[in-house]
Image (cartoon, rainbow over all chains, first blue to last red; front, side, top):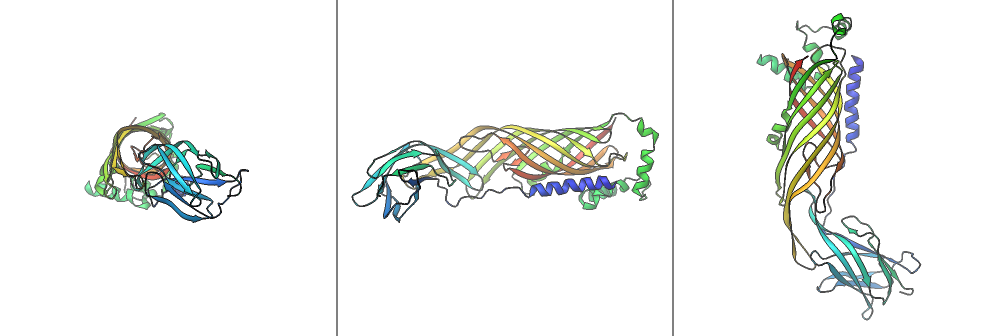
Length: 158
Length: 241
């Protein structure tokens, strides 16, 4: 009798204990996924750029990054309907680079609580070479996760 | 009769019901010491001759049916069949039909699914030595469901480049497997009819992902989360072998 009751109580305790590990999904505040660009020097060391940079999206009047000082990285949204976007990085008034990103667009249902959003899959990236040495995709999945998607390698002296 | 049924319902829903049913079923109505009853059963030569299969039961879950009345967005109809092996092990098969057709008022997202589900598992009666129609049990289940769902939401509006992308997907196919740990009790209310409840901890094992969505509601499991709790309230017909 006692063993039976102890066994039953242990089962309930086990369920309650396991239940502590239940997870709840936290929703992001803005339903926009960003492509994360991180800067490196030619030797592959993470760097911050000197001075200020601005980034605009070609074909729009939007300023995505406005005179940010000494950035180590930046986050840029991608188009929902286009499959190739062009970003213009302004280092100075006369010195700019263009980054071309080809991508697929993935409308995504997250949950009833968090709603829907647009994810992307990076297919190809290239750039001009005024200050940029090379550019490569590290993680092609652009979601709400804060992860490095693209590495930009800069030439020395910037 | 009504008074007797009420007595057992109260017995089932209160926590004391964990311990009391053994006494409540005493035919004389007196609360005999449980230990005395246990000794007399163990020494009863008739029990030793009882068959391996002691009985079979069929039950339905009332909680899933009336869940919508209490504000749930989803509903399920479930029947199960169970064998009584030596009053100790109870292999069980549960078959159900889960559905939801709901719209989130804030985000205007509509989700619809209706599909069967299956569970197979085993209960273990902690009071197996007592030859009474009352059980306190723990158990495990493995669940499986294959289903299709419809989902629609407002257009996605691009804030930078402009333009809209519609969000409307019908007949998205998916499947899921999960495991459950079950505890519960049941007691006889009239001859061959039992009632009981169970608490269930459900752990998702797998769910098929789709390019544009994950299933929000899985029939038989519930809201698509890594783990959650569930409950059943069963009406049972028990047929002794």
